[in-house]
Image (cartoon, rainbow, N blue to C red; front, top):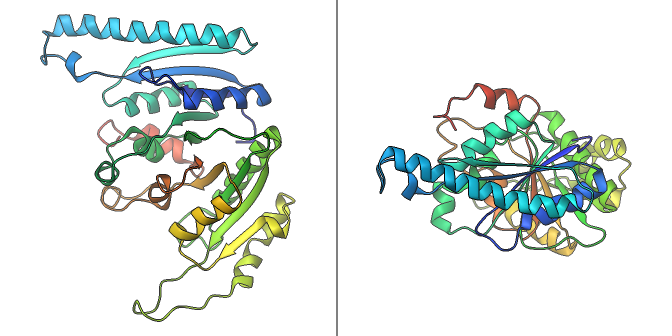
Length: 306
C-alpha cells in the first residue's frame, strides 16, 4: 500500500448516511486517487421461484440493479463536480461478498472501503455478516469504517507481532506499519505501534513474568525503518482484548491497523482471528491487510470456498 491510486467504496443504498463514502472521498482528495462506487446486493424475494417465475424474477432483478446504478450515477455526478474521477458499478450478488471479492480481483483497487455496523452476538458467532467475510477473503487492503469522523490529524495504531507466534509472515508487520505511515503522511496524522506479549498463567493460576525490554528490542528495526520514536511504541503484558481497546481510547485513536491471515477450512468456522474478535470491541475504524500472496489464494478458490 505504498500508493493509493484507486479506492473502491461499497455503497449502502438503504442508508442515508454513507459512512464509507465520506472517508473514501477524504482519502481520495489527499492522495489523488480515483473512486469507484459499488453497490452489490440482492433481495431473496427476487430469486427464481420465491414469488415470481424465472423470467419475471430476472426482469425484476435487472430493474433492481438499474435503480442502484442510477443512484450511484447521481452520487458520482456530485463528487465529479468536486474534481474527482469517479466510476460506478451495480451488481446482483447472493451472497454479496462473493461478487465484491470478484469485482476487487477484476478492478484491482488499492483499497476497499466499507462501513461496519454493530452486529448481534449470535451473528458474529455464525460469521454471517458481509464484513466478516470480506475480512477473510478481500485480497486488497480493507478499511472497515465505523460512525466516528476523523479529526484534522487522525491517529493510527498498528498492532504488530514481532515474535510471529501466530504464524504471521515476518514481512506483514512491515506492510502494516508502512500502510499506517503512508496514511498518516497524506492525512497529516500520527502513528503508534502496539504489541501485547501477554502469556496465559501457568496452569491457569500462576502469572508468567515477561521481559518487556526484550520485546521492545525485537521492534527496534521496525521503528528505525520508519523513523518512529520510542514513545510511539507501546509494548504491554496484558491481554489484547483489554489492553488494545484501552490504548486506543487513551491515544484518542481513529484507525486500528491489523493483519489477517488465512486459517484452515475447519477452524475458520470455529475460532475467530484476533482481528475478528476485536472488530466489535473497538469504536475505531479498522484497516485490515493480508500478507503477500493472499490474492493468488483467492483467485484459486472456488465459489464454495468463498
